[in-house]
Length: 561
Image (tube, rainbow, N blue to C red):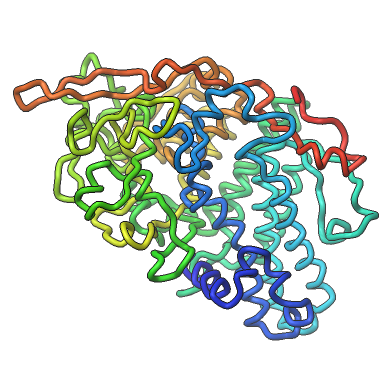
């Protein structure tokens, strides 16, 4: 998203209100809609800030919203340092309440953004004569896409929400009291916006315009939204025909995404080193602070192995996030057989499938010209989780590789600049595979899913029932999308989070030198005896009490709150 990030940087330099307070505070409507296409385009760029702010590695969001760390795949070694709240939310019963969804609370912020998007769509009808039709049509499509994006995050947290559009949801006391739509109807609204956007978005943007919303991006997000709708209908025991229709919508959107440019690339690791990979359908660019102030993040500080502190001149490395054994052990061997400590324990990190090496840094891994030492007393250490402070080294024996760039020197003094992938085609294929299975075609689902496996040289997966297939699909989503912000939300939409998270612990792999140049490995409780919590009411967090009190027509609170 190079052009967008550069535009945001320029706008921040000219007027911080474009970013911090919102573009409506920087320019009056008469200026925005004067007929100067450069000005209107800059306004639309400003609206893309909602995408940047949802990048899970972006500062400050990455301090508490790297959401895989609320699941079984990533363990935070910090209790409350660095603004991290993962363990307190996972282990304290009263952090999330009926008054406040804690770090998941996005109601007010989302509606501020939706109001801006609605104002743009409303005013575009008034001032359409000031611009060339093609120019304005494309910008309207972009804003519809961004409105869908804003609603997507809102619905994911709260289930059914109040739908406000440009016709009646911009402002005014007459629109204050409005009921919530059902969760399924809320997802239908997202889907409508994405379909409308897709009609008028371009196939691609040239050169410096790379990163703006495209047809493939709109259809990719449509496949995701339709999948959420199908799960919402299924969870509410809706008629089977309506559930099946939603799954068919997923398949249709995924096929449209493919038709408009969605594709896999042969080298899985390159997806995370080449922003313009054909597989990356929607990305967010970041820049070191020397390139563009306030558009960096802190991923290197939190993800890098502890030993990088010494090799990068004493830079601050907190090494907060560690992939769990639940994640590391899920990666198969290169021949497709399951990893098994009893079979492969003498050399556990040899002969694994390619996604393991692109995702996990482990004891003995080659990294920036050295071998990692992820054991007590080693350069990269091994921490013990405590209910205070930060372990300052991985508490699982692993480090996450995806969002850091090997041999990058700028992060230590100028902040991290690795891009974030908001959408890629492999996810679209997995969405489609799930929908095909749920709509009754296991053979088609396996064909689709195996495209993802064959890309990394793995043999085809098999399944003879829906239950078997969903286990295969869940495994594939874990290893394919690890660290990309899906696991916690997958468990919620499948209604499996209580079973997987509540009352559980996650584990790590503790290496110990054996005295002869090798290592022994011990599987340890990375939660150090603390039990995790996920309450049934967490499937839909509470609507803020302030909203319940001012919108008299909003309806009932979510169950359990």
